[in-house]
Amino acid sequence: MPKTAIVRIGTTTRSGHAGQRLHDTRGQIPDYVDPKLCHLNTTPIPVPRSPDLAKKCEHRRLVRYKRGELRRRPGPIRSDGIVAVRGIVAFSSDAQSEIQSLPVTEQDRRYVQTAEAIAERLTTTVAGLVVHRDESAPHAHFTLHGVGLDGQPVSRRMNRQALREIQDIAIEPYADLGFERGRSKRARIADGESPSAWVHRSVSELHRDLPAELESARNERDRAIARAEEAEAMADAEVAQALQRVEQAEAQAETEIEHHRQQTTMARRRLDQALATADEAEQQVNELRQRLREYESRAKEAEQRLAKLQSEHIELEPPRRIERVTGREKRHLLGECIETKQALVYPARKVQAAFKEAEKLRQAAEARALAAEEKVREEKRTRSKLLAGWSTVMPTSQEPSHADLASGSFRQLHGLISVEGEQTIGAPPQEATPHQIATALYLAGCDADWERLAFNVSDDVAAEIIRKATEDGRLDHIEFHTPGRRHRQMRMVSHKMEQHGGARTMKRPEDEVSDMTPEDHAPIYPHKDRGLNM
Image (cartoon, rainbow, N blue to C red):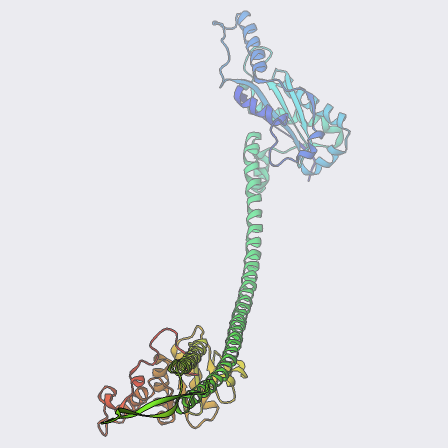
């Protein structure tokens, strides 16, 4: 491809020149320019401001008026009036490297020579010239005065012939470098070249379209990068979500484990406290029983002493001899004769004092015995409250053994925290439904291969146990502890009879009032503090 120099020119108004000057002098740096290369730009001829260009053009028009070529005195140039001709000198891609190899001063000289030759052809002068080396291709922007030396607008001389001659003039300063004039569009079309090779845009079009095209290309690149980053972000998000789900599952599992561990620890602590308190209560009961035996022994001794005092003489001091009248007899000669007999007597005051002392001892012994019995009953009630809310199952109908539970071990029993002894399985109070408690105790008793299962549970749990035993056909193998044992057993039998069609009529619990004790009539757990009968 031949090395060519290309020139494009066009007119501009006062406002248009202001924008062009801002671009040429880099008062505003476009997006496609590298700011780090702006220092390579040179200004061989400073570019004047729009008011200065307007004054120069107005002066030339005024000179023409004074020469008599104009009938009216010209006025100021309007803001939309033409004050300059702007142009650009550029090179083909093969010629750019050779231009860049020249010294900067030599490049500037040739640019100025080209601009002055074009100005001379259009009968005007060069107003300013700036060389840009901070873009992809080296080029120069030049500005000509919009009014010629003869006072006429330069635009009148910018016809097709003048524009062809300007292309010939522009190549002369570079002829020694082997540059050629570019071929005309008409000739290139005639040779059948592609429109992309001969369609050229003006300087204004290039400056207008190139930033948009560059911005569009950059946007497309940014969109491609954004799509790639979005895909990568989505992949990272999915991985992060998966990791988060795993972490949440692990955290939830750890939370549940910690919760069960805390529940087990708290239940163990409560059990230890209950067992310790129960042991202490048992020790106190034993002490009270010992004291009661002592009190009973003392009371018995007091009663024996009292009986001895009542059956024997009180030998507090030796009795006194007194003459006791035994009879009277009247005689004629002697008159009335009194018969006496000596007797041993004790003072009444001493006897009464002895009896009073014995009565005091007896009353004190009885009071101590009653107090001891009341304290024993209170200790029993305290021990029952210590195990309030426990549910138990045993192989017999005996009362649950506290000592057996105390020696038992904690474990998870079908999802329930429980204590398993040798002959007793108990569940302390915890957050569980009656169905869960009934299921755990019933299955635990079945797993232990006990022939009969004796439960000590609440009414709600008992109802669930009865339902499960009915489903398994083991209703005859279960029973319940007092209170309310007979009432609950009869309810079980009635349930079984209803299941088998009612072969014979069963009396309801309320129909057997005469056969039941007051304890049997009481509700199974009449108050909130429900517990075992120890």
